[in-house]
Image (cartoon, rainbow, N blue to C red; front, side, top):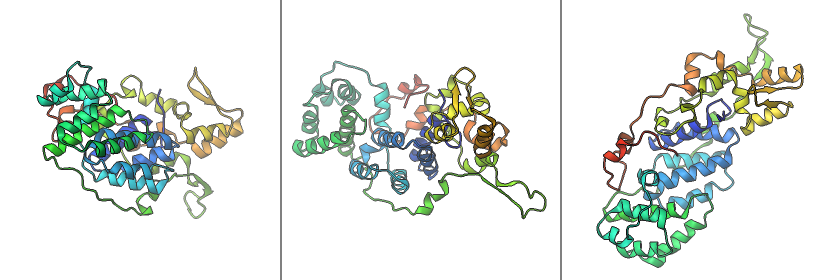
Length: 353
C-alpha cells in the first residue's frame, strides 16, 4: 500500500531518493531526510540511515559507526543534519549491497576460497554459513590482530540497530580486502552544520488571516492550504530510484495521489494526528476518509486541503515524475572492491532495498 508523507510524496520513494542523493553527494539529501523526519518517521529514519551506512559506507568508514551511534540516539533536527551532511561527503562502495542481493548459499570451504581468491564465494559463506570462528580465519588470512578485531566486532554487534551480524562481518571482510589491495579509505573528517542548513525544511502551515492589504484580493488568506505543496515540495524524486522495486510498478500512483491521497496519508503519523483529531476514519472500500460532520470536513480542508490533483505540472512532477530505465552496471562501475563480472548485471532489472 502507498504511504504518503507530509508533502504527499510516496514514503518508499523518499527513502530511496535520500539514498541516491547521498551516494551522488547531493546536499538535497537533507530535504529527503527532513521529509521523513517531519512526517513523523523518526524511528524508521534511524533504521534507514543505519541500513544505508552498513550497505554502502561502513566498508570505507568503519570508525564512523561510533559517530552514528552517538548522533542517532535521541535524534533531533541538528543531529540529523550532522549525520546526513557527513555521509554526503564520505566515500562509499557498492559491494555489501550487491553481494547481499546476488550471493547464494554455497558449500565452499572458507579457507580454500580465500586461498584461491574466490571472494564472492567467501561472501556467500559469510552471509549463509557464518560461524564463531569465521572472523578468526579472516584475521589469520589478512594478518590482523584477532583480539583487537574481535573487540571491535563485538562492540559493533552490541549496537542494536536491526543489522544482522552477517552483514557486519561482511563489512569487516571487504574492509580487510580494501586495505590489502591499497584501496583508498574514507578520511576521518567531520563536517559542522548550522541551523540555517535545515530550518528551511520545517513544516509549513496555512495562514488563514485575510491578506487585507491587497486591493485586488483582500479577502484571500495569506497562505491557503492549496498553496502548501508548491512551497513545500523543494525537490524532485531521484530518477535513480527506478533501480529498485517500487510500489508504483504494481499500483497507480497518479490515481492514489489525485483521488485517494487522504486515505494513503492516514498511516503517516503527522497526517494520522490531523485526521483523528477531527474524528476522521478510513473507509477501506472507497479508500477515502470520512468525517462525522460538515464542520470537521471544513476544518480539515481549510487547513490541509492540499489539492494535489489541481497543482501545476511542475509541482505534480516533483512527486509523480515518470521514471527512466536505469542501469545497475553503470551505477556499480568504479564503486566496488570485489571484482564482479559484468554479466552478473545483465540478469538484474530491479532489486529490493
